[in-house]
Length: 423
Image 1 (cartoon, rainbow, N blue to C red):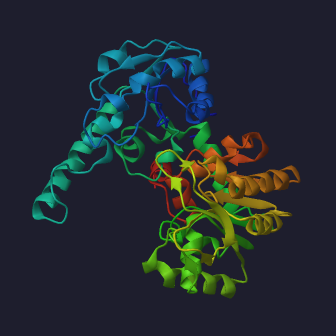
Image 2 (cartoon, one colour):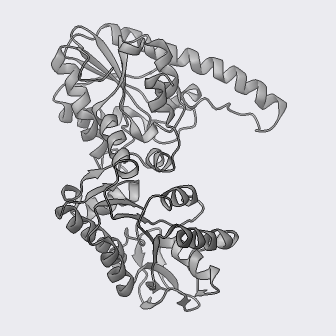
């Protein structure tokens, strides 16, 4: 069943959205991207003459009520975006009365799902690897099913539209579907777009295919990198992982971030790229500093900023951005691409002094997109980059999922998608 085929008239739909949005110290939403992304699905339900029940998590409350992670804080911005006065249920597991009172055209937002440990299905207060944990896990599995059944009881149809959690086998993403017939469970518009976007970069590839992988650790991206090396024509590796590669060749990296236990992994990536005929582009130089304050994302007064080879970072200095030569290499590698995937920044872009590398990549992607490339941007930091640089409307698609996108790229089956399909 697709959402376009389903008529919600007179029905209540419970929609798993991803409203895990950033808040400032006063509880105000600082980035409404995920809220805006859910609107087409929510408005389809309402336009048909149905009522919509939204459920989501926020943060990591670890199965306990935490007012700082209450979804009550986003009722107003969701109401404004949806154009409907959204009602709120302060207890997601006991919202029968609120759900039954809903009339066609009305909307209800449930409190944070993760205030209940049953959402994630992880035993609480028991040490992993013990006999007690195994027993607790069995009991939790049963409780999780009951929790999902309760959520399902609020509605006539279930819509999965939270790509950001599609890689998790949670009650609201991959258990609740069991309580709806196949013709009453479906992917929302956002999920359909996300799945199609991933398919475009993995199955429907137009060449040259260039992938850009950034971020601090090789270890967190190795599965994706290895999968991509069997698909791409060029792979740009940037950000903090640059220095693990430099160190693998006995480079001097000063205080730069490094995974000393992954040097062999870095060399293995280089060998695999060579074997597959993939052009591997690594930053040759970097901008480094001896005084970045990570708590404020500013350069401490009196500190120095230098440009140096990525494998010759002086003692006391830390590589924090791609240097001018690297920026030019990245631009050249991206130019002429027809399929582009970007995940992870080229440096500490949160600090205004070190945005050049990430900006160079973003602008090159925008130029290639204007020339006909399909560009997919995914992962929170990459999305923050394109938004910061005003490039969001100059790329083909911005994914709302971080971990889910990476696992899909890695070739893994996403439980939230498989459940809808009955797999």
